[in-house]
Amino acid sequence: MSEPIHDAVVVGGGPVGCAAAIAMTDAGMNVAVLEAHADSQRAPDSRTLALSWNSRLILQRLGVWSDDLPATAINTIHVSHRGHFGRACLNASDLRLPALGYVLRFSDLHAALRTEARAREIDYRSGFKVRAVRPGAPYSEVSGTSASGEESLQSRLVVIADGGASLSKSPTQRTRDHDYGQVAVVGLVESDRLHRNCAYERFTATGPIALLPCDDEFAFVWTCTPERAKQLLSLNDTAFVHELRSAFGDRAGRFISTRLRSSFPLILRVVRQPHEAGVVLLGNASQTLHPIAGQGFNLGLRDAWDLADVIRTAPVDTLGSAPVTSQFRKQRRSDRFAAITFTHSLAKLFSSDFTPLAIGRGIGLVMLDTLPPLKRDLMRRMIFGTTT
Ligand SMILES: Cc1cc2nc3c(=O)[nH]c(=O)nc-3n(C[C@H](O)[C@H](O)[C@H](O)COP(=O)(O)OP(=O)(O)OC[C@H]3O[C@@H](n4cnc5c(N)ncnc54)[C@H](O)[C@@H]3O)c2cc1C
Picture 1 (cartoon, helix red, strand yellow):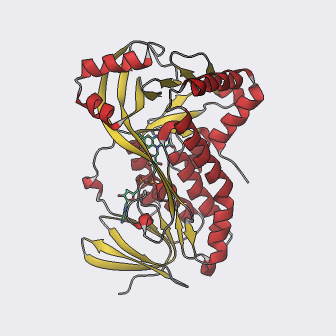
Picture 2 (cartoon, rainbow, N blue to C red; picture 1 turned 45 degrees about the vertical axis):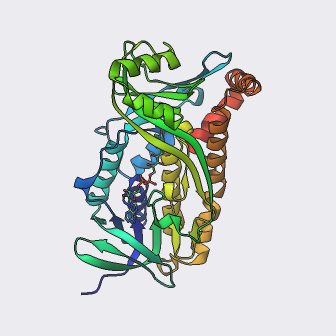
Picture 3 (cartoon, rainbow, N blue to C red; picture 1 turned 90 degrees about the horizontal axis):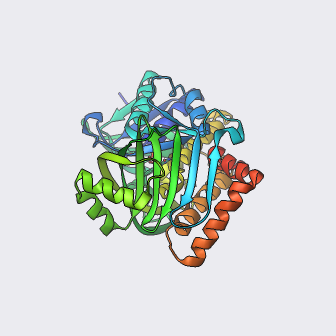
């Protein structure tokens, strides 16, 4: 029996691919998700994600957010620069929100999204590695290998959410790439002081360190050079705690122990034209960002939400057509551009200890703290994105 034609096939069942599949199913589409890894083969991922209040609202609408999801609220973000003047404090009450956002383990969020996708009876096929996408009209073809051998599917629209792996790296795809020459060392750290739902972003001589409240610990993201990361990962627990404390200080209490240390290389990779007739790229497949501003997944989730919004009103036989994909491109342009520019500027600005820049940063933090309209505008953009 031949495969039915799908309205949309999503390549990649990561968090953004799952969110897009759920949102498109809710918009009345018949969707399949093709995920290269079988659930049992997934390597543990010790990353934690800071999700904005807006992302919570989207996940709630998708039926993914529930009281059972282990999430820790962020009510305050304290931004400072070790050894220099200037600090800023961002509070949920400044925007009259219950929380600025939430911290979740990547694996918990991803599991909740997969569970919801399966509960909607989405055709989710794990262990299916897509090898090629052939855009076409009125149907595109997606082919790859699964446990049953070579398979191919036809679809009106192909959504590539492969996290920036092979498919979104086609030789014809023009990209803007920047290697920060940095690595994020991540893990969990226990402090002798309660976090009181406060997150810290602290700029230090050896790179920015973010501490995010996570259950009764902090999740840390320490950006440093690859050599330093290698050294930090080789240290025993006591020596690592000592290094973290020397770099960060005691602002969040005295660190006691760490666990689940690992590292991620940091790059900027932006696909210049992430949409063509029949195919759209979402999430990290479209833009891979430095984690300094915690925007990557939040932006990818807005990509997924807006895609469903655009196709909801399009007649089903036009799903893969140029007018639909260019409508999506228009709807995403300003938010995408603003998040990429903001994140890249922050990563560059706070990775240098050049004295005039350090003074500029201090002045910027003081201005941010003392000018409430400026602060509220920045917070709104970070939480809700930029709307056209
Ligand atoms: C250290 C660190 C901290 C971060 N912190 C934050 C944060 O605080 N807030 C935030 O919003 N973001 C953060 N991010 C960014 C966030 O993790 C990513 O933006 C997000 O995970 C991207 O999700 P995705 O679904 O697009 O890609 P991925 O999570 O990479 O998923 C892609 C999926 O596609 C599958 N796949 C790949 N190729 C194929 C193929 N050929 N066929 C089938 N399947 C395929 C893969 O197996 C994978 O499951 C952070 C990132 C890092 C590295």
